[in-house]
Length: 371
Image (cartoon, rainbow, N blue to C red; front, side, top):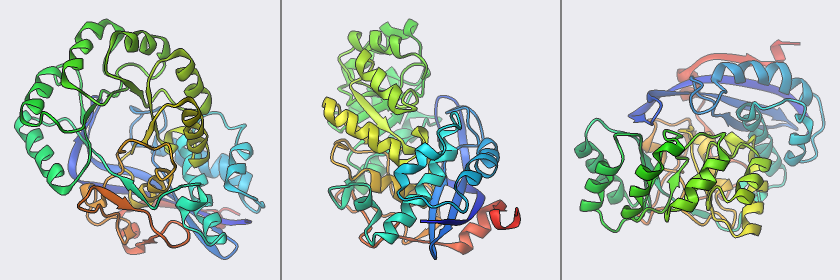
């Protein structure tokens, strides 16, 4: 494919319900929608960098600088044989994985259209559906949290993930397990604890959790390995796995027993596929996390989640959990049995709603205007 034009759309999307983690409470989500024109086709991707540098050092503003100034000059007017070649093209750009991921995703959309296959097949997926879980943020009261769990279980979600932090963990989980003793349940700390909290974290073993996600700092693989030896519950790493190399090191150190694959965090679907393959070879299950993406990023996550080693329900939920309306049509919909069908048409599988995109857009950059 020959890249002819790149357009960036910075959007702000109001959330249906506020989402709180151990580091922030969000009422709207910012991201960069990447639109690439090549060979008479249009591809869409999403750079899921947030407005703040809390989940990662990247922000919407850093991606807004890096994509047009450093990534676009390397691809504009160039022939790209396959999206997997993109990583080599941008290898000199250190970090900025979320900026890279949005561009690579759009290239995958175009390439799958050219191959006349659905995006999930282009990525090597083996099934046309995924099993969906849901992530629930920290709430002001446990009663509100319990009501939300009941709502999502009634909708059919196969797994519940709860955000935790010091002071919102053991007693909250005790109340949840009192009402829901048997549901598939996991927790996510977003690095809110340290090794000094190990004895406290051992109390989580009593709740029969599927996993504890990212309990400590993303830089601390050695203490995660130490903590994993103290726990019966598997540790899952998220923020720590920013690359294939970090995934390999985490597995060699036995810092975790499960890995959360987020293509946005790793630099694009190609790196996500590589980590998936590594984990499958090592017998380590993976699942797909989310970053409150719009339907564009969500459909890319659906496609990635159809690969064979995505054996656990991910955080790829229906559009209506996040946005009304979403940026795509048809929106991502979950069936009553807790599954999401992967689109069967070539490419991304949905039409971008230009009316909603314009309504939510706060700025635009077009390579055609920068010549």
